[in-house]
Structures are given as structure tokens and as C-alpha cells.
Image 1: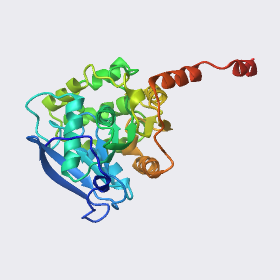
Image 2: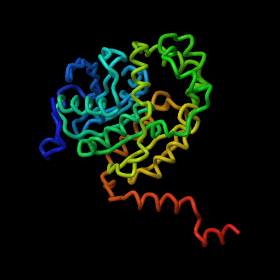
Image 3: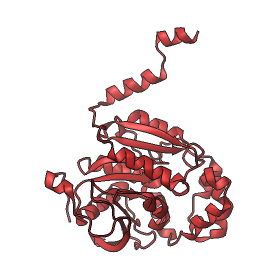
Image 4: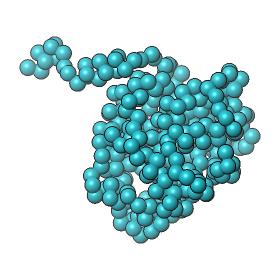
Amino acid sequence: MSLTEDVTSADKAGPAAAAQRGTIETRQVTIDGQMLQVAIRHGDGNGPPLLLFNGIGANWELAKPFLDALTGTSAIIFDVPGVGGSPRPAWPYRPSTLARLAAELVAALGYAVVDVAGVSWGGGIAQQFAHQFPKRCRRLVLAATAPGFTMVPASPSVLWKMATPRRYTDKGYMKSIAADIYGGAFRDDPSLIGRHAAAMHGARSAGYFYQLLAMTGWTSLPWLWSLPQPTLILMGGDDPLVPPINGHIMASLIPNAELQLIDDGHLFMVTRPAETARLIEAFLADESRQVAPSTLLSRTTSYLRDLVPTSGERRQKS
């Protein structure tokens, strides 16, 4: 299957919802020889579906609390090759490869335009999709994520715990480190760790390594200013893994972006699914948000203006 950037008004409508609203259907779909485990959350058929990219090593079931909390929004999520129900590919891949695979998947499902969301590692793929297929991405949601290897990093102790997929294969180990790497509600409620660990399965070492390798050297900083989509950035205020300063950086560079901080940790989409779903659906439904033209110069000027107070502001502070 091949893709172009030609999108007609008829294409934008997408297929009509054929299943009961709120149900989640799983399918195995083969795209360019790669079998994907796909979950489709059926909504009310109004507006494009939300294409969701999950975190590193995460099977789609880990996003089920969020999917269940959606009201009218349809959603599509798939296990990345080498994770969950999707077999490992023959060769490693880059974010651009995965973005194209996702674009071909949603086209095969009958959609030409989608809203796109990405969580943590998946936020990088979501940024790549919006950049690579701007006419196919109507709006963008970035949750607990960063602009690639140029991010403000977590502490070395947190990064070391993330270096292997052991937390996905050893539930005892997961329970022992969850508070340290995820923060927020995981610090106070041990039952959350147990429920989260129970939903994890299928993170294979090779698949996890491919995901780590995919992001090696990748960054979105050179082109964030060019993203045309209205963008919602959600960050956890107590996120040891992706410090919230990364959200401020992205919000300052993406032209039509807004940042909202959530009083939780890295996995607020799991621990606060109803609140997160409400914020995202309100953003997707807000017709007042329009694409505003921007240039790299205008974004840089605006960013510097925010950093440096005007003479009037200096006088007021003195």
C-alpha cells in the first residue's frame, strides 16, 4: 500500500461506526507484510478517530482505562512490532517507518484524517506522524513526552531502571520501582501498581531494544516550529521520567500549542483516565481552535520575548 498527501472532503468523513458505542474490538491487520495487533474503540462516528501511540514496551491493554473513559470519541491503537500481539519485525525501524506504518493502517481501516495522540515514547512517534503526514493529522495531543534525545533528561537512577524491559516481565520488580519511575499516584497507592502490572504482557527483549534503537539520535526540535496542528501538551507535575520542563519547551516551539499540567506522575492517563479523557475530548471538540501561520523567526522571537522582560515589566518589579 502507498500513501499520498492528497485528501478529499469525502475522504475526511471516514467509515460509519458499525459497532456499539464504547465497545473495543481487536483485529489482526497486516500492513506491508507486518502483522499488527489492533484495538478499535467505537465512538459516535462524529469527527475523526484518535490514533494513539503507546509508551515503550506497552501493549495496547495498558491504555484500556483511558479508552474506557472516552465518551463519544473513536480511537485506534496498535501494538508496536515486537510488543504485545504484534510480531517482531525482521529489521529495526525508525520513527518515520513507524509513522508510515500507522498512516497505512488508518487508511486500510477507511480513514484519511485522524487526530493523533502519543504517550511518553509514543509521543515521539506522534510528533513524527504530524510532521510527516500533516494533511492526515487534524490535531495533536502529546502526553508525558519530550522532543527526543534533546530532552531535559530524568535522573540517571531513573534512566537505568528504564534501560531494560524487566518491569514488563517481572511484576515483583515492577512493583518495587513503580513509584520511583512513575511518581504521582503510584507513590501513595500500592493497589494502582498491582492493577497496572496485571495488565502488562508481551514485552519481548528484542522488541524493546528495537524501540530504544528507533529513538536513538532522533529529535523533533529542528521542525517543531513547523507543525501546523492545534496541539495539546499534557505533563505530570510529579513525573520523574519526563520532567515537565520538556512540556514547556515544546509548548514554546509548536505554533498552536497549549500546555496543561496535571497533578500526578508519568502515567496520569492510567491513574486519572476520566480527567485525561475529558481534557482531550474537550480539546478535540473545540471548533474555535484554528491553525495560525507561523515561521521559525516568529516562534524564536516570541520565545525570547517571553524570556526577557520588557522595560515596563522591569520597572514594575523594581
